[in-house]
Length: 307
Ligand SMILES: [Zn+2]
Ligand SMILES: [Zn+2]
Image (cartoon, rainbow, N blue to C red; front, side):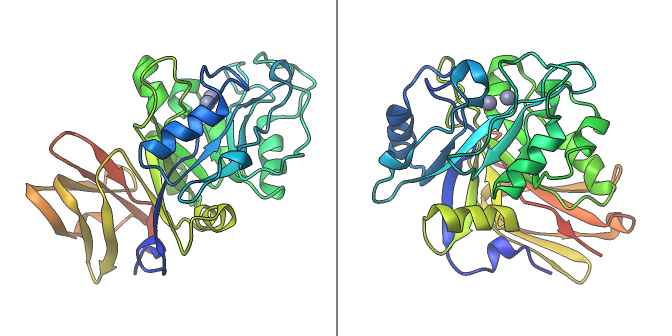
């Protein structure tokens, strides 16, 4: 049993799926945002400005900044309707058409007559987007909220801007509970960069594709052919009989997590491969893998379904 990201043909392309610019509340213009990501060794980004009326519903046109070796996927962060706590939804949509129709969302206050978050997410998915539930911990999102986003492909499990800005970076708890309900979700790490604090170049995805082209990257994201990282490389994850085998760049810890409290860690010096018994996962339909290097930087596989 293999994760397809590690067996499909192609190579890994490094991308940031969640970014803002002066087209909404970021402080760097789109050209400079793209230049900086390219200069930092990224292969692509999605510029996902806030899709609200006060910014004139931007689907920021990044096509002029595609160069040899760097591409972009059109996208936006969608806002419409209230979560259980009364605050407006944040939904990440990567791969939107340039003419995606606005909701009635003048700003960041939820209004009673708006399209709901799950509804705009469904519309974005139908329009071709890869849809992620953005920063659940930062939003104070309930499990019911997260569960209601039927259209989600993924949960944003690490948001670097939320880590730097307020130490609420996580979506792991939300993701793991939904996986245990049988939801076939993947996970993504992002920057959510606005460039007014050190909120950039901290969390990214590595997407397996045969070329660095927006349509191929988007297709791979939707298929789950990627992993997420803050630094380490994951080179292979597969299940053989009752073990999971993980190959990576040099790390000190390899962890496997599953349903409920099922989890196990393996530790060592400069480990590049680990074999971990799945004895503890007899009641798990799914597992996922993380690795951590000596600097404390982590990388995360998408889930593997064991059943
Ligand atoms: Zn947000
Ligand atoms: Zn954002």
